[in-house]
Length: 189
Image (cartoon, rainbow, N blue to C red; front, side, top):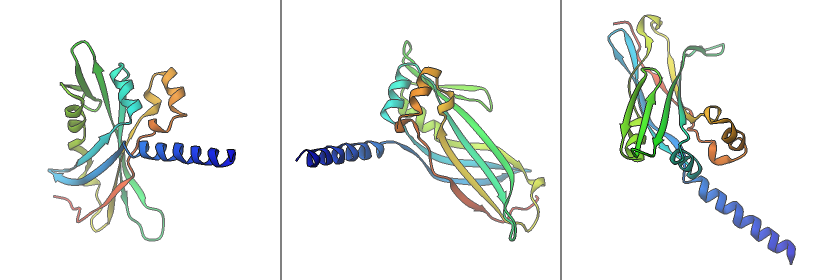
């Protein structure tokens, strides 16, 4: 009888953990590259849903660092694809309790934006526009290219006492899957 109780308790705990895991995650809804003059610009929409642990940490003053990683590969037939662009874009989400404001810091341009709600900050963070990714002069005519995009919460940027705990708790491992799409008809202007 005790084995049956143990099995039922284990099943309920596993199911509760599974249900809790479904409440958070990052999802890339769409992404594209647009030519702008002599360069390609990235545009993407990402849905950021944080775990309850991450939200609690943010509300207690812990900054959350998000990384958006982009790769562009030139497709080759008989050998491995060649990575022609590999960049990381870093964003930091913070909360200041005294004014009750959320702030988003974009490392690439050094700008802060302030918001009255977490929802507004996260929605703005998820709209990525006009990021210069590569020069069209680096594109080889007639070659096929594939772009890859991923977003994740950077555990390494957490404060040391929290980081050591975060390694052990699955709710801190928040990431999107790689989103990939072909770049069609890239040519020089």
